[in-house]
Length: 370
Ligand code: AOF
Ligand code: ZN
Image (cartoon, rainbow, N blue to C red):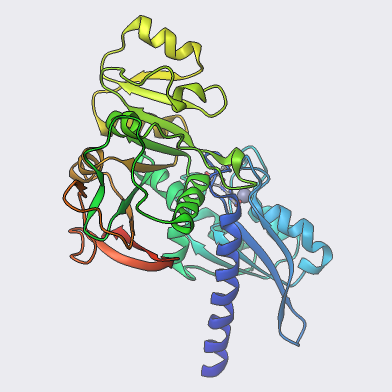
């Protein structure tokens, strides 16, 4: 008996891990809906096998479960559904997924994360149980929360999930202080780490920098990975005095990839000039109300990418959920700009959750401790 129980939970974890990987396919592409993964798994006596799979569609609908059931067809009868989020119980823009699971003859539902959406929360599980379906919750719960962190943060805190991304040299610098404007920064990390940060851009709804970084680096902030060029996030520049040049790469590309310029007091002529190029100018006095406004317009995730002062401001305002600290192998020396945070020493209020190598560069990931 004991062995059977252990075996079943291991199988559940393996299929949930696969469902969570699947859910990442559409991260950042499902609007305000979470990107959910669903696998339909049968066991006819010779061991479990997948008969249906799906991820929430681009744009947010249809939901994962209805598509996975369609994929499985009749083979869903008597099968187990692995879903990364509690199946929905409400009539929203689509009918409830719990109804579809019940109608398809699913006999067991295994879930990772609970849905805080007040239209669903707990009701999805209850409706499944009321229909006689065996429901298992909290499988790979930490990983589930991580995969759904953007959606969960916006739902529960009313602001986007914030990732602070920093690239730091071996001697703890984020760049050189002696460069001329638009000279471009020194490369701290190599192509693999840079590609990884573009994956992060593709998965995120928005990315933010300060005007100092915009003037010094003249960045694009787009995702330029082959095949993911359409997945660039909303680009945001904090620009108190509207100093962002009209000929900057950011403004010149505003008609193609959305650009938001955040100022404290908008000069109307200057605003018009930006708007003519397709950029949006908004007024905000502080970070917290800015994040609330972003959340209200459907932004669930934000990458804070520079520079040191902006990073410090987000940390001091306690608005950072996740830190990705890329560390290059080379040193910059005395002309360096000291990074606001360093590796090794640990970040107060944060715990190291993952370390990975991208070629010669290391990436340490920290999460806010609850
Ligand atoms: C699921 N499976 O794949 C997703 C779910 O506007 P609607 O009708 O699409 O409903 C949005 C809500 O649906 C969202 O807040 C969340 O509760 C749920 N998302 N649920 O069963 C899915 N994406
Ligand atoms: Zn649903």
